[in-house]
Image 1 (cartoon, rainbow, N blue to C red):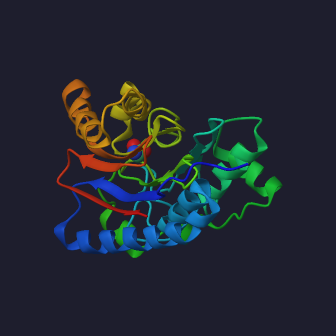
Image 2: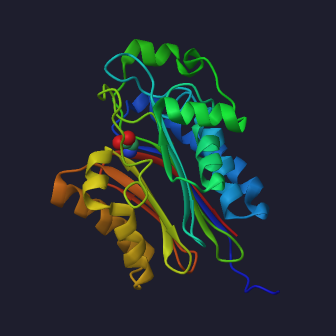
Length: 278
Ligand code: GLY
């Protein structure tokens, strides 16, 4: 079978928010490393590219995912992650996991199993152990910086990809919001809110305080707008305007439209992101 050739594209972000100026260069450098890892995997398709990118970002202590994730009000880390492929609309997601080394790997195992879309908490950890997904001591995720700052957050890491067959995929991972209530889930493990992909329409990933994305189903809305012909840069800027105006939300989005055109926008003072096309 022959496929039409498309120009591959990968967009990666390391979160939108108001981090101290002193941390911004470090976060951008972390995102560039994620982009490199993802791009190296692009020859194996959009899904492998977003997984490789987000796995790397989960290891970056300056970003709010896995190692370096923000703490909840009990001083613990609870991690959310998800991924979606735009062909069959398969989704795997996990929420509030404490001991899974790479939450995006567990999201993949949930997606590949196919019985469920979203697993949370202890049940998700049990599923990880049953499937041979690496678990760890939660201390692995703690850094001096988190313990010092108890950090502002609501940011996320994520990646969207469009491969040379026009296939779309998205992956996302986060520690959620600073001082969140234990058990709180944000937009990141919720399809349509924090991420969405549909081949022939586009792919989107959000970052910021998740409650606004959840109330608006913002990433689904963005993909539908791209699918109905609105250019990706216009969708990105309208999405973050809508977030601010309609629900007072803050954050950013990264997108790729159905022709492989990337875009990004935020309504915060900073979002670390990077893209590669070609
Ligand atoms: N966007 C990350 C969260 O609100 O959990």
